Image (cartoon, rainbow, N blue to C red; front, top):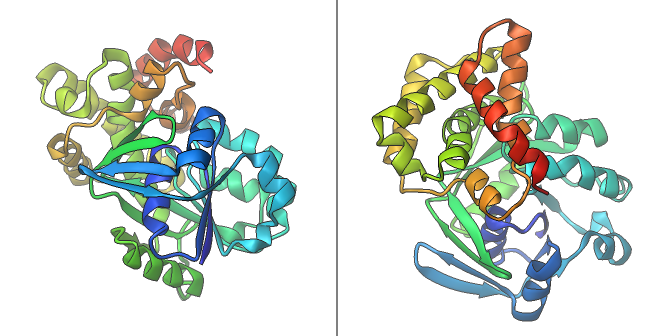
Length: 315
């Protein structure tokens, strides 16, 4: 299998390093010093204390369009920041249209799949989420990550009653197994994406505001109450998309992040590095849907107010 990963950050880079073990070729896109370092020395990944270096083919998007055809790839995985997706799609749309291969989204939020469908044939789009993983590009060409790094994926938005699971999704599962990547193939990926957003919405914005990691937030009674309130608002927003999350779901998700290894969230990392934070994907999506349902979301409104200036100042 020839795989292209668009966005070789901490998450994309980790999965690229694992898939490199069993796929015919793995190509990644990156930019700046990170791209130059991967091209020169390969991608170094330290996961759970174990180091690996893989000689990936690393490209910028201009080289990708000029030197490769999209139909050369059997699968494309999108691991961009959610706020980068629209810009990249406008750049790569015509190039991507010349292929029929599946496109798997592994991004934060619950709107990336719909955005992909608005540009490309919806039948090509798979929904997906990376769970129980934390990571950071600690220096150009080097990633440190932790967690079991499970991928949950499936047809977007659900597998309709009577439909068979597409063969391509089952084939990809075989490669995930060979790459030692835990996975779950689901018929209802939309619900799984909302569950991931419940966790992200609870800890990501608050960590960016306080500078605390997930363990510190969930084990401090004051901050834990804020985390839990935000998670409840996210579950209320999910009803707009027809996804019903129970109080037991919320409790289970809170316990999951509370008992997981301490993680510096992606939003906090982006804030520290002066990059644009995924405010709209993680907080704005909840506020928007609660407003459309006519239900309050006071905690997310506070997040939005506190972080809007930061989002507008970073780039």
